[in-house]
Image (cartoon, rainbow, N blue to C red):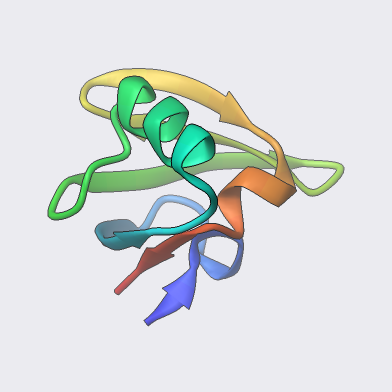
Length: 71
């Protein structure tokens, strides 16, 4: 397992765990970051990520992305 911030651009990954406090976890789950879901990094800009999750493009900060563990 590794944080989403370490993922390669264009590579499909599976979400294994979503960390952080309950409010952060709930916010990420509302965006579509759920355990077992797929996520693909589209691009990185200044450390922040644009990702495809649940057929939507979502921009998240480096801090939030570090709480999402993938494999």
